[in-house]
Length: 167
Ligand code: A4P
Ligand code: MG
Image (cartoon, rainbow, N blue to C red; front, side, top):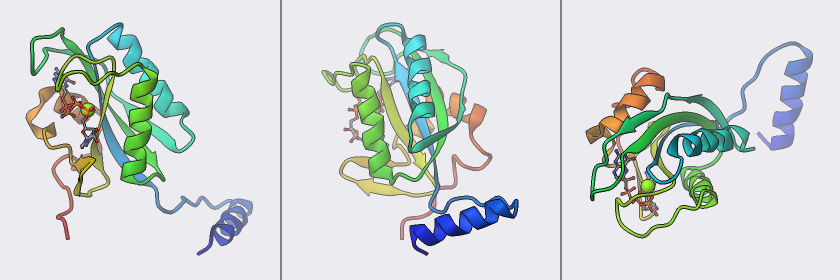
């Protein structure tokens, strides 16, 4: 169906009081982390960025969790998770997340080193993605309490352990 047909159908349904949902909406889970600057304020502001983004609909944002750092010695982190819906493809969504990281002054100096803001794409629908720039589900997510705890707070049941097998 062309986008004009889709719009005509939606407008007809709306006149008749029917609710239609747009095709091609994807659900994604995102991990947020920070351990430089005012991390709690940064994570709240990052959630606002997701909420205001024209191509992303923020469904829920977890509580903020203070967590001991995994990796080289560095300050504790503040972590959280968000669930979003979006029409963006997975790589386009990753690029938007990286643009938000940049807007908060993210610098990549050391692997697993301290950061103002890290936004990782944990899950994208039930897909398994093996791309040079993107691994989904996030390879370490099931080993990390600082991911699983906030995600369990907001994730729809079954979403964590049921990725579709790669075809
Ligand atoms: N990339 C591949 N898959 C993904 C994905 N699913 N989501 C690529 C996001 N990016 C993905 O990421 C490096 C490259 O990974 C990107 O260019 C992207 O194309 P990065 O954000 O530049 O570097 P990074 O975050 O240092 O690497 P990595 O491996 O993502 O680290 P993690 O896994 O994010 O771990 N301790 C606590 N308590 N809390 C934390 O949040 N975070 C880390 C970083 C270490 N210790 C922590 C925490
Ligand atoms: Mg990262």
